[in-house]
Length: 158
Image (cartoon, rainbow, N blue to C red; front, top):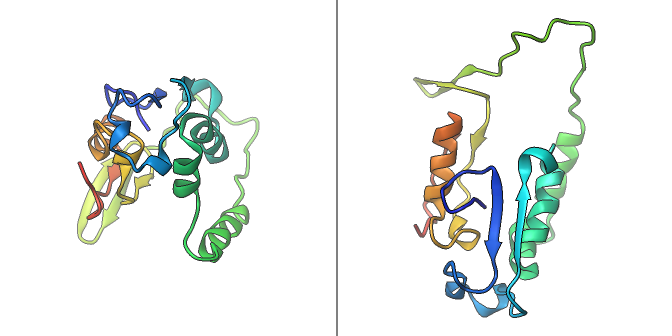
């Protein structure tokens, strides 16, 4: 979900078919009047749940449900959610915050990658369902711009 220039500062989606949405199966297309939604994630998305809510506003119902669901009875999805609920950030108060950095080096095998933050965009494929024109290319450009790692799926269409 990115804007046409590949940046992630705004999430835009046009349900009218102007951006290649007509290539999706009809069940994943919104067939009502043309609607455009723009969300500035920098002011509205503070955590993953906020991004989930933003996606729900931007994507068609069928596409959102497809992307946000798990397989089968969704047991693995639920277990992942429960696992992350057991992690907490411990706030440290009254500390100097002028020189905080999330930069680090990630080791993958015997290779080391300096990154701006320890985040990896895992290979998911089918980014073209959210951005039919640029697909994984937009995600890869945004990851490069943010200096974080991106894994390309073998299921990519772009």
